[in-house]
Length: 172
Image 1 (cartoon, one colour):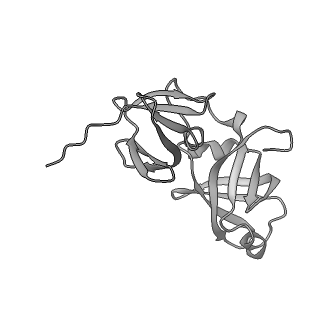
Image 2 (cartoon, rainbow, N blue to C red):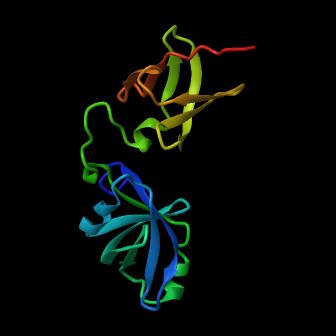
Image 3 (cartoon, one colour):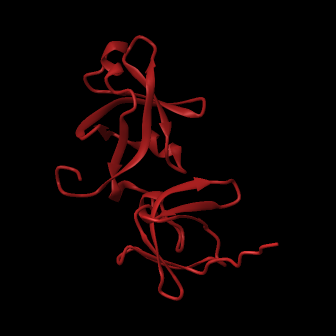
């Protein structure tokens, strides 16, 4: 949560320092890395500590983003941020079309079959190229649920619940 109580969401991870002026290479963890170019400030999370930081500069760099934050003027200043998460207020996220969700909205949902059987919670998402696969875990088992219309029947973000129709398993 931000200081104002609004949820904050991850959009990147600090990889390492770059150059001599306190810049850092950030791996975008968002479908729209160009969103970085419009930002004026971010939240930086190192373990359990979240700091609000003003951005001094932002520019594309290969498949990553180069940023410079206040109080970082040397490579040594940046080193403490290696592995840190870059976050923004949830309200700053672009609106998505109906039926399309951010990963942070999906991870943590409870998953049930159309028959009402509880499968577990979505713990992570694996991108395959053609569609995402939701990793669902409970105490006994792990399920791999393809994010396709034939399987995902309902997503209720308010109830934090997903309904799925499991695919038939063919055994020889």
